Image (cartoon, rainbow, N blue to C red):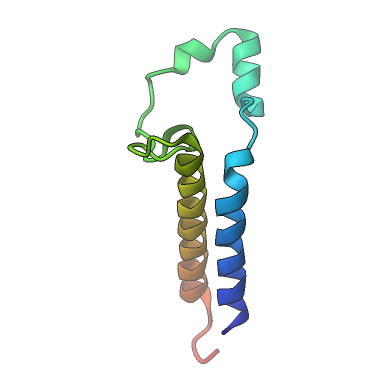
Amino acid sequence: MSNTVKVFIAAIIVAACLSPFASSFPDGLEKVAKDKGFLDKGEGKEIISSPIPDYALPGVHNEGLATSTAGVLGTVLTFGAAYGLGKLVRKKGN
């Protein structure tokens, strides 16, 4: 098994196990928007709707499972994008 596959599997395990323990507090930008009073002005004005809103997979009714699944899906998509980009920029013959 290659090192890339080992890292990928480890990342999926970490995402699945630790995602449910993510902070429920808003991120920095959201907190500033709330503190300055303009958070509501941006609500409902999204250009593109999120496929995984609030880091929870829609349709999964168990909150912990929804968050964990979103973490795994995000990890898989990130690894896939990085792998694809690496294939594109890699020199031929390497």
